[in-house]
Image 1 (cartoon, helix red, strand yellow):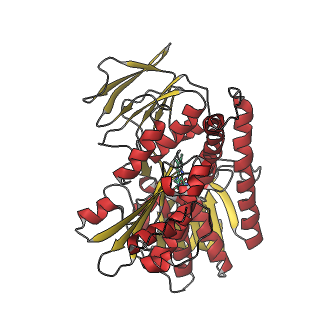
Image 2: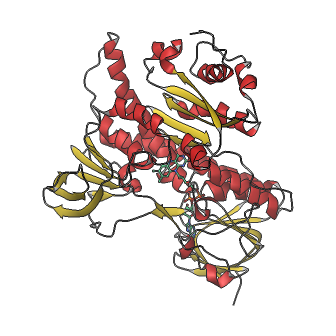
Image 3: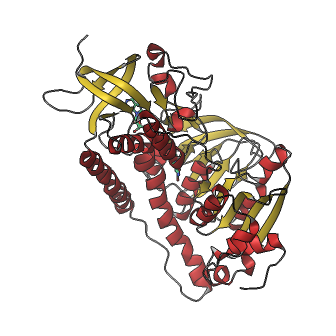
Length: 475
Ligand code: FAD
């Protein structure tokens, strides 16, 4: 058939993985075509993920700060939430970033095609145009011929089999849209996404119940971190049901009625104004026509890749949520850079020693490298050092002394292999731990690094001093 577009490198999907790959490849001299079905770049992360959720969490933190201020004698009236203006604020934050991306694509000469793509051969993608360009009305089908491709089509939320089609039952995208201010809300799934959105709605005045199928909230995080979150949130959230399954959601005039199965769960159906289903995300791999190009998928729909992020077909790469867990923007970006460099003929490989995870809840929970649970499961000998924030002058001054900083060192090499922080701003503070793990730092390296005082980041240095057995009482 006729070929409408030719490129050296096709990038399919304009999320963090895709735009990072496209920009790096263009910087390295490749002729790049980026195919994205949405009108704006940024993917899930910028449009309906990381960024809007953090914009709302920042507002929630402002509301919650009143409690600390009131204890210190500064009392505000109850907040008045003007939902329309909150939505506009969220859109403004997102819009600034997506416009920036469009400008960056243009500056690098990356061509962006707004279309939905599907592979029809090892070097051909069929695209269905999405925009209303009069010369190419939406629905027009065209063919792209490429030398190499980087697949970055991301993931989508998992739906429950019994989930009713009702505006009061939403996924994370629907929850970020702020359709209403519920009085009673149910979050199905006690992972990071569910608990972040629950934090927002709780601050906005809802009683938020959470149902988690596994034994604990924040699966993947060490339990000692989760306990700190639970203590602080006991009065903010409604019921937190663990080892519990939601078995039915029924839409009635007066609300969504949910049924549960589990020891501690209520036997009677519960009524909610809004239900967020946050039970995980599924790779878009099965929707891309991979078989036409001979690209393999695993049984979970993820695309297996090598350290350069090549699929089994050597001129086709895959990155980001498509390739599996952890589904995180910073992993997608790093993989995008590796794949772009490999496509441009550079030596590159994904060999990260750590990929940080952060729950931007209150308190934040962040961890990097090995967790204690993982170290135990692998039979690794690690030495643990903990510095409680109750001993940090800055934490006390800031009213956030419930946190702690934990470091895990390999018992033989004494190198830092993991670390975690629970407390205000933990997601920012974990950065030093990420770098220390990558650099192979030992406790002494961190302990003898002069940290600014009084800060929360100095708890990383103090934890390292605990590991050295030389903790002085600095606070
Ligand atoms: P995506 O961002 O999913 O982008 C894929 C793009 O491909 C999309 O724009 C899609 O429209 C496009 N596309 C798909 N199929 C086609 C097709 N056939 N043709 C054309 N275009 C197509 N991660 C973090 O690291 N930190 C966070 O704080 C964080 N918060 C999150 C909060 C929420 C509510 C959610 C849902 C996710 C969050 N994540 C967070 C995860 C993060 O958003 C993803 O890991 C990240 O977006 C993955 O990037 P990606 O490039 O692989 O794919």
